Length: 462
Image (cartoon, rainbow, N blue to C red; front, top):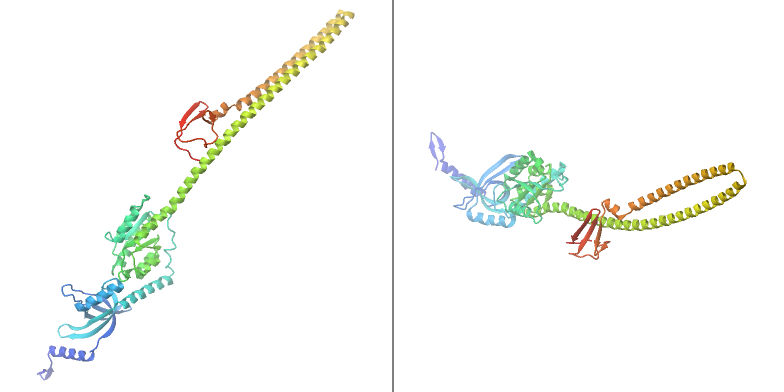
């Protein structure tokens, strides 16, 4: 009851608070739905109760704030629904739609008693924020920037943003470091928070550190294990998505098994699971190594084919030169015989001719004076000397021709061909033209100019 003090009507604090409590209970006797941001859940394990801090912000400014409570039974029920639908528990820093009653207590003051929370609204709010980030990046024309970067042919230097205890990180290393082909990758871990309100700022900070040593890396890989959509909300923030979109080297994301793709994954160069991301990097080595091995194999095969072809051609040329040499030698030999025979006949004819002339001269000399005989004798001697001179010149010319022929024949001699670095391979005493008759462990002989080599066949390739 009130009392009079100094002519004033005075109420006790309890009377005032009880009056407020009575008024509020009459005015707000039903529950109603409210939307707000839950900045802190304030869950107490010993009692199982929660005392959330609820706020509303407009234009980045706080316009309303109130304390609330969720009793243990209600919390267990709501939390289970969140885990079933969002794959994440009820947690700090999310927008919620809740059913509540207004309570006023003389000791604890005004608060909201939360009876139920709709997890589908929270999921919708996350999707709305995600779409706003996408639209903003597209409006600025940077949404596809990182995707347009050219991936290095061999992306072997990797800057990893993850946590050592993450299963996704462990799976990634297990695949990339133990690949069956022995490809070697250099990777360096930049530890970071991967979920929660501070995760986006933590990842941005690691990206800025990587920028300072960007020349040491080919790509950046963000590795995180599976998680629900609420746990991945940080990957829809504009600041983180922008940092990745504008990053100077390709950013690859392996952010687990979420059903919906985050903005960070959309803006990244490639987005797959941690294990598939490791397999993707290994495949880049395959894409380079397999054609290289094929070219190496083709080069070896073509080289062997060319060598075999040239060996066959060389053998055919040697065979041809030998036949030509023998034929040319026969031709020149016959020509020499004919020349010798003609020369002999000419000589006999010439001698016979002059012999008859000498006989005639002798007959004339008998009828003429000794002086005429002397004159004729001198003429005969001169003609004979001239004939002998021409005869010597003729013989010298033919000897020179014969020497030239011998030199050509010598050049075509197989021994001289071998001097120029060629060789002849024999099998069972016969020169070898192809490998069809050969088999492993057969003995072959290779003839060189300065000797021969005996070999045992270990392998044969066509």
